[in-house]
Amino acid sequence: MLAPYACDPAKTRGRLFPEEESAFRSAFQRDRDRIIHSSAFRRLMHKTQVFVVHEGDSFRTRLTHSIEVAQVARTIAGVLGLNGELTEAVALAHDLGHTPFGHTGEDALAAAMAPHGGFDHNAQAIRIVTRLERHYAEFDGLNLTWEALEGIAKHNGPVTGPLPYALADYNGCHDLELATHASAEAQVAALADDIAYNNHDLHDGLRAGLFTEEELAGLPILDACFAEVDRAYPGLDWNRRRHEATRRFFGVMVENVIATARTTLAEAAPASAEEVRALGRPVVRFTDALWSDLKQIRAFLFRRMYRAPSVMAVRAEVTRVVEALFPLYLNDPSLLPGKWREDVAAAADRTELARIVADYIAGMTDRFAMQEHARLTGGAGQGG
Image 1 (cartoon, rainbow, N blue to C red):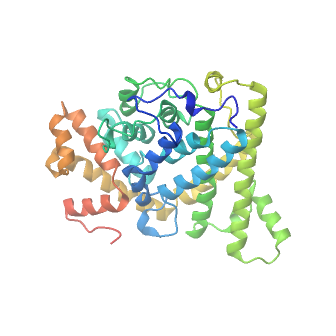
Image 2 (cartoon, rainbow, N blue to C red):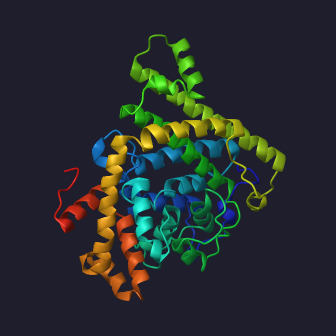
Image 3 (cartoon, one colour):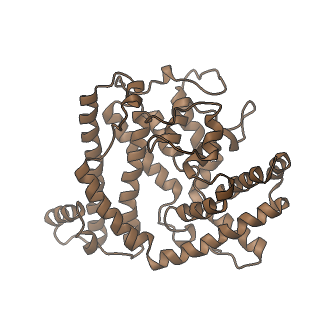
């Protein structure tokens, strides 16, 4: 049973291009399924989370991260009486717009696109699901419901100020009400993203040898998690000890979000999804105390993992890849594959051409970007 403030697929605002509904799948189930079957979703398998794909088979990729986010989101949504299919759809789609090489690639592409409207991976996700996926006979994109598109566009909160061109372009023909908060389902997806990467970045950092369990045991929240494991399982081997501690950390975050959301929803008593959007504040969040502790953990990860010398060396190398590819394609569009050259032929000006180039580069996997760089510059490829 859905809570009164949940999004009901029977009451969806519909799709930009009307379609006959399925006899056995809800509108939000179809959204989720279309995302899973999209080309962009498959490519996440070979896109960086923190470590570039060739650095190890056991580190998270954008695909495994998205699956973990969806699992967390589905759990929280079920407890809160929200629509699980919509929550999962937003969770699975939230990183579709990421470039190769994670945030490093995004920073490089954003710098290259600065004269042409910039680049933002959330806005690019909207561009992918509304334009760049071209498989259906009657429309470009996936023709997702308004609720799914709203969740992808503003799961991190209202989008105000100058809009990235990829978002402004679509919003002009299908108003996503960007100045308001998203549905509770989308808010759950956003917090699930935080929970997933807070947890798995610790795990991947340990695996990479960037810090030790003893260092983590000195951080807030984690100190209690390690202490509880040591009391329950004295002498436990290091691999099981780190797993037991980080899974407890994971549980603390999930339980905190659920408890806080229950309290907020009980106090606000929204009678519909529309009332959730109109509250002017999120209903799904961490407590201030836990958020303060998490900021300390994130600061540790920033210092010891995201800015570790070995990670920074790779960041510099992959930045050069994106910085080289962009002007190569922009100045010689004949280097693009045939289907992309069709778009180039229709481009009205250099800005439209730049946006086509950005679409192409953003869709690349880590491996393909490195191979293309090697092919076009005559340099040595990376990763075999």
